[in-house]
Length: 554
Image (cartoon, rainbow, N blue to C red; front, side):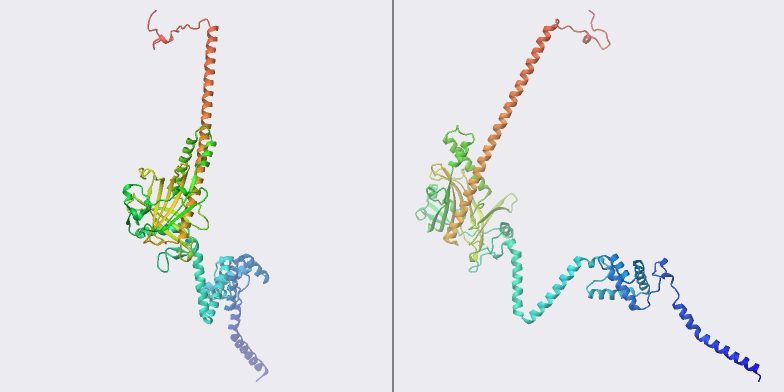
């Protein structure tokens, strides 16, 4: 075999070897070229970052976490710029990369699953999740801190309960009672008992001073539930010898009724002992069918008011007229006070006594029933505040009082009797009396407890009637002064108005008189300067017909 033949065979073998190697490497070349083919979406013109995104799912998850974290910050744009500056790229490039990563995950269907995992991891880290920008604001952070404190407190409480169950239960009960106390004190004064439950409770009691609105609403509601029920025992008649009371008529002198509504009509007291600057208390125990009858009274003199009336333009009136006018003003003011039922405006602070009168609708729309509530320190259980409900008994004025009884000095009175649920059983009477000499007015408050009724302590009963008397006297004095001042102001106003009216009338008269004199003077001057003055000659125009021709021929 020649050398030429050997060279051709070797050349063919080499070509076959190279062709085999090319065929083996051809898929690899194509795959490498496909992997690194540029993506048109990566270009900056199409909103890309200018380069390919990582293929790793972990890296894409990191980009998504960065996207969610930036969105949950209070200022996402500043955070985005800061993160881009730390990585050496622009904020626009970083935003495009994050958006394109979210779009790619959404197209592949992995966005929701991966987003849940990102939110869970961020929530565990205390940053929250989702795209709600407000979730990372100050209120949300405060809420998260409070929730953390609550969780920590709950865990600590659970540990303490497991270690010290008795002490923890006691502390929990004390905390609950403290919260209930703080809640109920401004509403009802912390009710200890809402009714009479002997021997544990005598009646409605509160630990602290109850608001007057609570007392009124409580008994208005009790009226709606089933009306009120009197706590007075049944009436019992006593003969005049047994009674020994001063009566107003011969018919009443035969028998006196003790118990029942209106039993204080026949009660009297010695008004001659009334003083001006001091409350006098008269108490009777276990006498004439009553276990306790206590009366507090004080006189309001009219001398000061006579001086006030005299100083205001009444110097010419006689002393009797001034006294009559002062008495009339005093009775009018005190009667207005009784109409308003303002019995506890100026009670002493030591007794802390409150009184409120109110009306409730009866079954018939036209009728109304009057009730009242009274609260006082030391009246309730354990020496605390007691609430006493009352109901209107009767009211007398000048027309109702028997005129045949000349010894009676009563002018007006109002009485209330107790209801069930209180602390004592009796009747409370407020009255206005005049002195026999006519020098003043006597205010009295009487509390009568029959033998079968519950009796409060004597000192407490005396304090009750004396506090009410002091308040009524103080309110009456202020009202009389106000009424006198208003009358004087009205009198001065009427006098000034009358003076202005008289002055205007005189001025108008003078003006009219001057005008008449001027008119008469002008008339005299006209007659003196005019030769035809006093003569009238018609021009003839008034005698023409509508056609223009005279109606007659001269």
